[in-house]
Length: 250
Image 1 (spheres, rainbow, N blue to C red):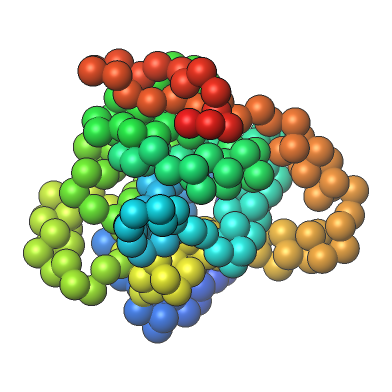
Image 2: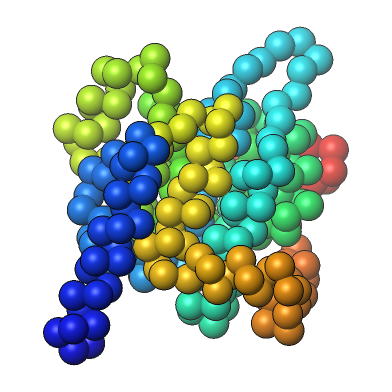
């Protein structure tokens, strides 16, 4: 890259990052460093409760997700597919056995969903072995203490903001366990925020959106490949990750 293009690229990254800072987002790594890490990413992991929803629980109550975040994950996967020529490996890793997480993963054709996992680093290692990935090439979306063993090994980490937890946020910052803290909480589309941020930093947001709006041949090719992905479900038994027998009834 010549000097003029490098300057223009730096200015663009600064312009995009400033929009998200004004939204309340906090870069704990420099935006330019986030871009460098992002270009190496080949997989995406999402926690479920506290990321796609506020983590509310109750008898007979199943968690939820929203379409804004769903569209964000799809556009992010499409953008990375365009950049890398292949689908990013995508997974949910949750400490709970939640039917909605399975339904979402099936609908969106994620590669893997891990439920009832207390040691999330085990699931990350399992995912990497299955798909020939290195943990440093995975981006993770997370929100709480039980996610930190996962965040520790991933290459790019996004903390979903919860204003009521200043001390855990301080701990995460002091231990360099995230690269960006969202301006929005999970009730207000934090996953969508990060998805748009990453597409913006790669300077492909408008291209990705226009392609989806036009439903052009490139998007159709991506979508065909996405829809061909079979979702596999796993859980933790003792200190091992094992396949569940029936994904639809787990």
